[in-house]
Length: 464
Image (cartoon, rainbow, N blue to C red; front, side):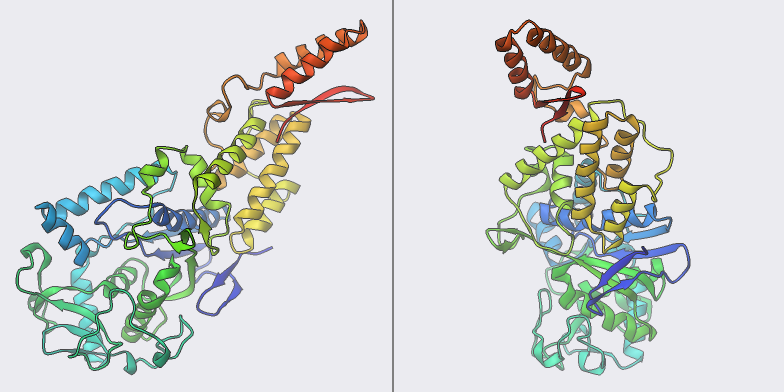
């Protein structure tokens, strides 16, 4: 089975075929770094971490770009409020983000461009759009994109322009030609700190002092790092409109080519049926969650729901993920795993895992395969099966730690001890000391070990 991915742009699953055989270019909209990342941000970064992991596991060379927005209104306001420079604030928040993502096992992208390093490319792009008549300068000095001059506007959201409403970060001002026009370059305002202002005129593109708008950043950075057209563009579902819609208008308007062949969007994390967000004040930072739960527990919680589906956050769901992860680690604790040098994707469990992941990154079904394989380890005590379990788990960033970290105190799996207890129980039954035999069974059951008597003797399994 070949890899298929759901394309938000076409609203259907498509067979994935990269522009260049064996290579994938993927751009994902990253963090605006004015505060600590919350678990909703982790869900986005985790979703595309799994995507790039599976692309690599499938044999592709992946150039994964996830940007950092390090200049915008919220960043300026936070830096001013703290009495520090914008760079000091953003460096602090980027370092915190890297610490948090590392704890979650989220692999760093190939490139992590910061918006402030690409202002010249943004100004050049704005100049191209003005030359083509797609952008204009308003009386207040802002440069805006004229959406009604881009005929394909609305293709990603699937609505006509008249059905759309200006979204978050799109200011509706009286000096715009149309209320849906969005800003490409924000003219400097009185009282703004000097480190929030660039000399646009110096670049020769006919704009004055100011700073870039939000949307132009990603068009410039994606083109600079991946080319005018690349394979996959990703981000949270909340970015589909207006941010990604505006990216398409800018990029395609300038180059005449669609920026990405395939668009992927992950679902929201919800709390009490509302999207988790800083603006609603219903968020939990990654650090707060990791203070209560093991990183792999949080990882399993995030990946066992399909990336496009909404995810409900609660301690109860994380507790359930912790218990589920312990069942997998319990199987690994039975034997010393012997991971394969390379996964044989034609073998039954590996093939089932691959089929799940090839179907639009089907992590729920892939994780179900892990539990089936754990059951096989429990039955067979096979070091090879345990090694495959660890290897397949590793594709999702799971089962890479010490199994004892996930075992309850006093409930360690000691195969030699269990075998000795079974022998003692058999002796007790032979001398008709059924009370002792039952006591041994109950003691093992309390440690999560189930005894099964059959014609071939007594076997045991870990309770799952």
